[in-house]
Amino acid sequence: MSPSSPRTEFLAGVRAELPIALGVIPFGLIYGVLALAAGLNPGQAQAMSAIVFAGSAQFIGTQLMGGSAPLSVLWLTTLVVNLRHLLYSTSLAPNMRALPRRWRWLLAYLLTDEAYAMTAVHYANHQTPLTYKHWYFLGAGLLLWTVWQISTAGGIFLGAEVPASWSLDFTLALTFIGIVVAGLKERPSVAAALSAGVVAVLTFSLPYKLGLMVAALTGIVVGVILENTSSTSRNL
Amino acid sequence: MNIWLAIIGMGIITYALRLGPIVLLERIEVGGTARQALRFVPTAVLSAIIFPELFMPGGTLDISLGNERLLAGLLAAVVAWRTKNVLWTIVVGMAALWILQALG
Image 1 (cartoon, each protein chain N blue to C red):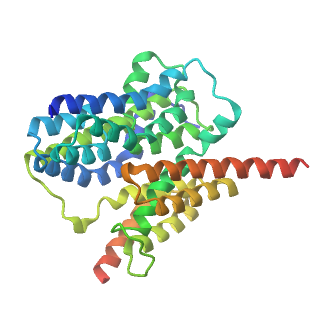
Image 2: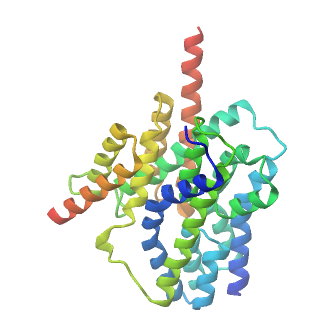
Image 3: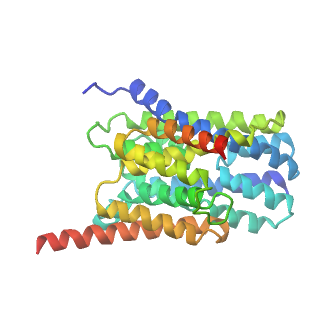
């Protein structure tokens, strides 16, 4: 087993995140165009990508701003749409306990769906040492951040659009499929995936991405229940 | 609406959600069942994101053979199952999607 180092971990994180980062480009471009259309000036639109750094919240947020929604509605919507980050943070927190404060504050800032997906899997792989895994997190997070800033700038300042026919955004779904399927171990995890997926489809029309939270919680509960019932029956 | 105030508020809320648990759980040990639940988070969340993308590409349910993303996604899932390799999953999935779109 090759020894891990900050450098190898960082590069591994960047490499792992590359396909996802590619898939995020169309979203960045579209956001840039939409933000301007909603009435933000280029500076505001670009700043949001750095200050908020959350794609779906930025999309919904700019629409609300354009529609002159009250500040309270905008902020409440942001809270609900981004609730799932609580899950990500909670899930990674145990691994980050030994890190200096600066690291934890920086990595938290970089915690998006996309960075979380690769990082969580990497942390869960106990065959590699924990020591430098925060560098992996940093690599993945920084790449995603950089691509997000650049692609939103592309949409804002160039009015650039990637032809929808390229369907580059599908790489995001494909990466997630790869991660989920590769990580399926036993019945509890399969059940968790299926139940979460089905509920997500059923609750799709719920506002503020609430369906996602409901679906995720469903999957977690199903997984835990199945895991506990199968182990108790084995002990009988 | 003061746009800058709006943006900064959104940023604070988002960052608080991301940082909160990491800071709060620094001292607190996460208990048995909670830790067990956390192990399912990636699978559950990613599945919740994937399924609508595959089964409801335009926002409405589409389980027909005309849904190219669904077909490409299912093929990608098979590849992921056999190879356990994310890169191959993406390559085959994108290729399948482009071919299906070209044929469609």
